[in-house]
Image (cartoon, rainbow, N blue to C red; front, side, top):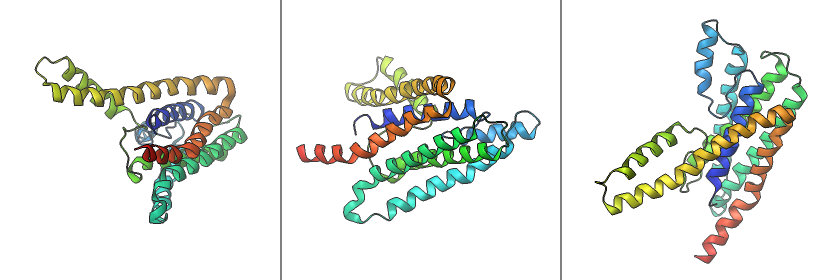
Length: 230
């Protein structure tokens, strides 16, 4: 789908920010960021060490489970992999929403209900992190923006250079035009996640849930339609 990575980047920014604000500094999409927070907790700064440790096996389960689901598809249904992973993530995201609502108001980072909600969020985002490695398609990373921002800066410098030949300039411009929407969508999703939490609490997670459900319904159909026109 043409704007799939842009929508997924918005989902990642939304969910990561909401979980960070709601669950005591927990990252669910950029899960390795929790290493820093675990280190800070070990040094006596920060909170929620149990929560941040618990999400790692959940994230691993999301990645491993995605791999098993895609590998289990018959060869003639391999193109359904994207739809299957979007649907799986949508179900898990809805579970994260309900678990968060059930845990509210969250009393502390070590509450078992909060830990369960955080684990479901990490499980869901593990699926999204695994998706581009399991379903081959042109695209850009959509869960962590550090690499995208770095590449966009390098491309901007190249585009400003007078020494770049026309063929290289066209390639750089095409890559830059793919990176920029994902970066902007992630930033917009992050702001929306924070505002959504402030207004609606964990119910705000219905927004990424519906976005993923929409992708699950339409992604494969549109790919087949595009292939038919080609």
